[in-house]
View 1 (spheres, rainbow, N blue to C red):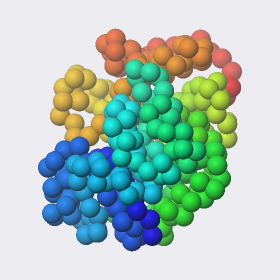
View 2 (view 1 turned 60 degrees about the vertical axis):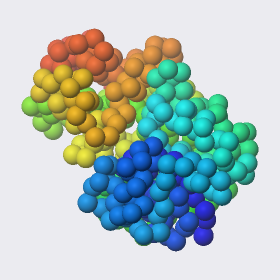
View 3 (view 1 turned 135 degrees about the vertical axis):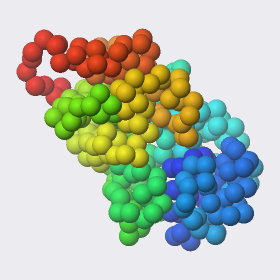
View 4 (view 1 turned 135 degrees about the horizontal axis):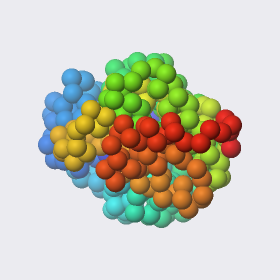
Length: 335
C-alpha cells in the first residue's frame, strides 16, 4: 500500500481521499479550513463540502502541509484551479523529490491562461513533472463517495506512470482508463464547465431537450476546435474527458456550473449567486480564460463568447441565446 498526500479537502479532494483510504492506503488529507480538518479527523465527516457521507476511519486530515506531504510517495493536487499555483508553490518544499504527482483540478488559471499541468510545471521540481499525470472524466464527488459506478481517465506522457495511477485508483466502482493526451484531457475538463454554464442558462430560460442537445453538441465542437489548436488529439474529445464529462456537467443536477447558469437564466445576479454558493463553480473564472485563449489562437467559439458576455458584460441571457440562433447559416464543421 502507498503513502498518499491529498492537497485540497473540498468535495472532490475528500471523495478521492476517501476512495484511496478505503483501499488501505495511508492517506493524509490537507485542508485549508481548520474546522473542516477537525471535523474529518474527529467525526469522519466533511459536512461543509460532502455532507451526510461517512468517511473511512483511517483517513487522516490536517492543516499541516508538512505532515501531509513529508512521507507521501504520491501527491494528489485537487485544490480549486485558481489557487493551485499558490498552494502547490507552498507544498513543494515539503514534497519528496521522487513523489508521483496527480492533478485532479479542472480549470485554466485566469491570470496566466495556463492549464493545470503548466501551472504545476512552473512551481514543482522537474523530477515531479517526470512523474506527472492528470485524472479527469465524468465524476461527481458525491456519487463517487457513495460508490456509484464511475469511469474516468488518467493521462500521462509516460505509460508506466499512467499504469501505476490506474492501479492506484481502480476499484470495483471506480473504473480507470489510461491515455497520453495530457493537453486534451486538461482542456476538456476545463472548458466543459463553460459550456455547462450555458446549459444551465437554457434550463433557466425554460427551454427543453432540443435546446440542450444543440448546446452540448455545438459546445463539444468548440472544445475540440480550441483543443486541436493547442495541440490536443481530436479523439480525446470523444472520450470520457470530453463528451463524457460534458454530458455529465451539462445535464446533472449536482453540477455547480449548471446550477449557476440556471439561476442566471432565471434572472439572478452573478454576484449574489456566487455569494451563497458552497463550493467553487470553476466555469466562472475559466470562461474569461477560455475567451482569451480563443482570441489568441483565433478559434471561433460563439457559445463561449456569449457566456462571457453574460458573465462579464451583462448581456441578457435570452439575448445571448438569440445571438447564437441568428448567426449566419453555415455547414456543420468539427475542425
